[in-house]
Image (tube, rainbow, N blue to C red; front, side, top):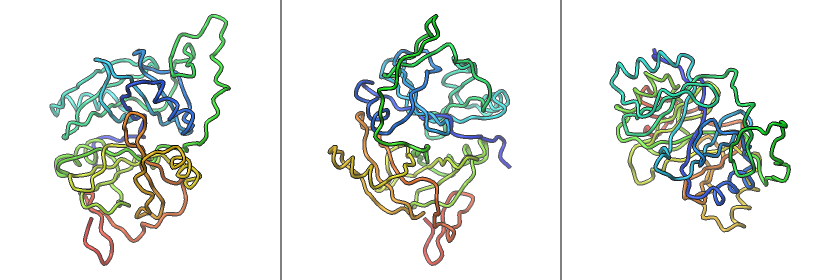
Amino acid sequence: MPEFHMNRVQHWMFPVEDRFKAIPFYRDLLGLHLVPAFETSPGVAMFETDDGTMIHLSERTERTPPTHIAFEVDDFDALHARLVELGHEIVNGPVKRRDGRPSLKVLDPDGNQVEFTTGLGPISMDNLVVDEWGRTTERPADGSEPDLSGIKPEFHMNRVQHVMYEMTDRKKTLPFYRDLLGLHIVPAFEDGPGVAMMETDDGTMFHLSEPGPRRPPAHVAFEVDDFDAIHARFVELGYEIDGPEKRGDGRPAMKVKDPDGNSVEFTTGPGPISIADRTVDEWGRTHIPGKSGI
């Protein structure tokens, strides 16, 4: 039985060089929703998908955190105490964020940064507003907000479908996510032998990939309604595209690089998938009838 339970992925953070180059990609092309930032660094811009999963961009300074994933957990204090007991280095926190929630960051067995915060509940950000470039300020005394009506995105991302981290040894890394954090192991829809896939309760996936010639870089994947249209638009805009390809779950997928070289994947939204013939063992190794495990 796992020790804890991660309710959902709360956010994924990318460092960027220049918000004026990065934000149009996520705001105007992909259609993510700008929201006030709960961190006080002036270089932070925050976006949400419809289900509240956040994508954070942080301009590079000496304070910029590395790329990381954040999970929501019910009992923050208990998790903090257990991480200290197990000897995990707390690299940041606990701190109280601007939205009133506690937060801390640790390193997983591969040195990837993982943040934890509390779950859904009241937050206190009514006093903050955000402008078209993701800059958060105090709400003016007259209660007005910046005019964002001029933002007309080309596409709409339904939700974050998965986040991928690199790992070196699944027997060192999986116990952290499987036994301590309680992520659910599921069959993989990719056929690389080093892939392990896990889910939170809402179906957002967390992928780990061991070294190999096909291992992709750390990335975030979005679900989009019209895959063919976004593929055609990226071709028209001159983006270098990895794919499209048909994944093991029957859905199309492709990857592009954002203006800072971060890898971003796109796939289709909820619907029938075809991985019922696949099984997975306790170490995240997927087996397909008639084939060796992947």
